[in-house]
Image 1: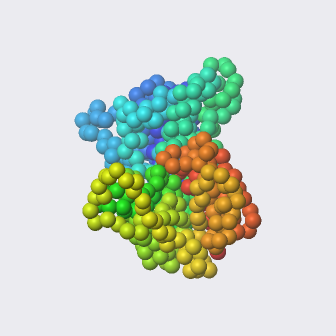
Image 2: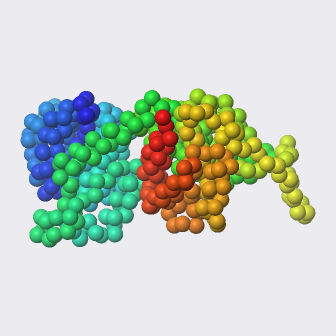
Image 3: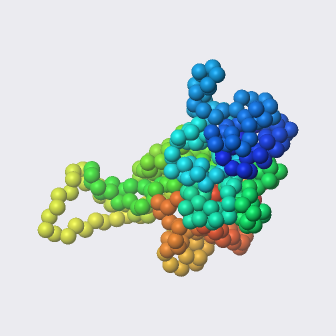
Length: 397
């Protein structure tokens, strides 16, 4: 399963570093190409010679190779990898990763990485339970990193509790699962909408909403990682995914035209955008000047993209809608599910902590056309995106 995969194993200064030798050996045995990186302090626990012998590659520690004087290029190294696995990951290294402190070759490579990153913490019980450690792990998860939680067991200090790094066999299983999940959408075409729409009032003003586009962009990114051909149709947002084809729009009218023109060619259409329901009936060609009188703006309904997609949905297509509600959440979501002919709808409750616009996390409940439902705990939007796509797969023939 791992044959031909390019994997970087990053090792930091922990007693659990000895396990990295077994991890590298298992990866090589499965046919992976492995390069090892070490922090300077990691060399106090295990030698580069051991790891270079096992990996059949030079071990990278410093920016400059002391023997040849050549520069170790962190950018090229990061681009080589299909996956970076940092095992063990100390509290110090996770703090540096979470806060962008690139004072060694390993963290600098992490900050340059385009591939997914798996983090396997290892430290003593009290360190693992410290609020700063928990916060840094949450930050790393919000960035889309995969965290393999530390296990309960005997620790180097003699204490017994959480903090023991997962065993190499378990880490390899996580790696296998990652690559397996990355192929689930291979051959599928996924259209995703994201962000707000802006409805023009005059040359300088518009009606819009607070959507950042983070949820839709996370879905598009995750679909690409899972092997799909992806088209992202985005309203105004400062986000970007270089590896995904993106069509930028501004208004609900533009989104309607672009989505309807392309949707028929896609297996999944996931409408995560916060599309304006109303737009000004008349748009002033000049800036509307302030006066002593109240300004009355007449609005008209925009075209309902989701309803139109529900009417024209092909037998092979999966259509997913979103509902952002402040009250009667489940009732409104289920009504929208039926009315728009959706396969399932993703409900966001705006009043729940950790959910809503601009947040890096989300809490969702899914209702589907077969009267099933699933509630998911607070997760990063990248993890939520994976949950949504996994749910959508069951509606694909």
